[in-house]
Image (cartoon, rainbow, N blue to C red; front, side, top):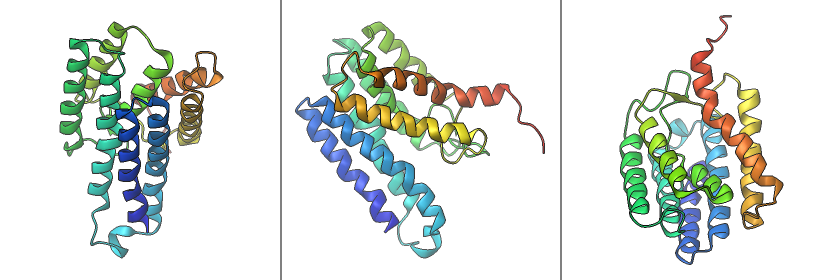
Length: 223
């Protein structure tokens, strides 16, 4: 049942892609937020019910990576390209860098650190693109953000896993839940510029992006 729950992410990815093809961006992001929520709960459920022992016929890690590439990378990259936020050659640069770099990162055996964080930016382009849709900066700002995050995929800067990184989890988990609520609400109101959800998105995104690097700079207290 846990594997079946994980596999629903592929359905949500297809629904998001169909919405994206019709340029129904708010609906696309709503489906991606649903997929993001499923991705957040299936891991703890898999560990709780020991799927590696009780359902070893299916590789849950591989299944999760396939769906993550669709929902975290492929669909958001397409949206960024077709939305007009990156005109002309900038859009082509972005989708090539995002899809190629993320494919290599997802196959990198060094992507996880000892404390279950990520080594390098974990290819969460769904979160990045959603925030870009919400705040709509200039295309040069977007291009710089894409370039920096793509480079950070292969630089050993730590990014937290909001569920599995134990340090500061009492802050990280509520922050991620709040981000999910803000993201869903922002998409629901079609990214209205006066919505309070936009400010919440920016604030929670700043924490999620920089928390891991701060943990590297601030040594953990020895117990």
